[in-house]
Amino acid sequence: MIDLRDLRDDDEDVLFQWRSEPEVDRWMSDAAFPSHEAHAVWFKSLRTDPDMRGWLITRGGEGAGLLTLTGLLSHHRRASWNWFVGTAEARGRGVGRAAQVLGLDRAFCELGLHKVFAEVMADNDAALKAQVATGFRREGYLRGHVLKNGAPRDVVMLGILAPEWSRLRESARRSLTEAKLIAS
Ligand SMILES: CC(C)(COP(=O)(O)OP(=O)(O)OC[C@H]1O[C@@H](n2cnc3c(N)ncnc32)[C@H](O)[C@@H]1OP(=O)(O)O)[C@@H](O)C(=O)NCCC(=O)NCCS
Image (cartoon, rainbow, N blue to C red; front, top):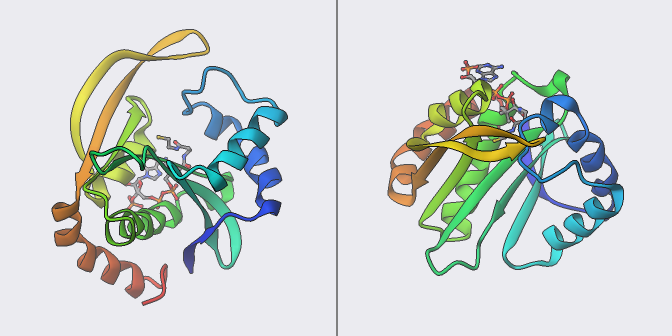
């Protein structure tokens, strides 16, 4: 089963390890790969700053990835979605699909957001397909929008609104419970 849980002190190291994986790092738009010290500062903010929320994605009770929402204090009631599944072994097995359904429920049903949006590098096929399959819509294409290791990269804007999720969530949850990916 896939689940989300709140972050704990002892997640800091594994998150750094996953963030260092080339298949994760290649899709992140940070200015540079974070030092261990910068990672520790970011991890502390993630747990204490009311503008951010983060959850560990778990699979069979073991850590499998990270999902974060940032910008929660915006009066627009929208937040930016960021996520990864940490190891190659866990990818492509429905972990991301389940984490999205659980995460969108947190965003809309628990946090009361109006919109969730994501900026995805235009050649990130896995993230684009996974997010569009769950209900995110393509809202824009931004040329040379981020610099990755100094090189400009195009970005696709994705978004999903609360009423859209309320129409989609029941069937999304049903197919995941039938596949025994999430608890009913
Ligand atoms: C994007 C990511 C979170 C998806 O999680 P995942 O557990 O691998 O995805 P799932 O197994 O749940 O697959 C969900 C859907 O995504 C798509 N997908 C997954 N991997 C894919 C790949 N390598 N290529 C193309 N589509 C892919 C498929 O449409 C799939 O549905 P299907 O199995 O019914 O065809 C994961 O691949 C990842 O962590 N990638 C590296 C980090 C990253 O890109 N993060 C996002 C930054 S914006």
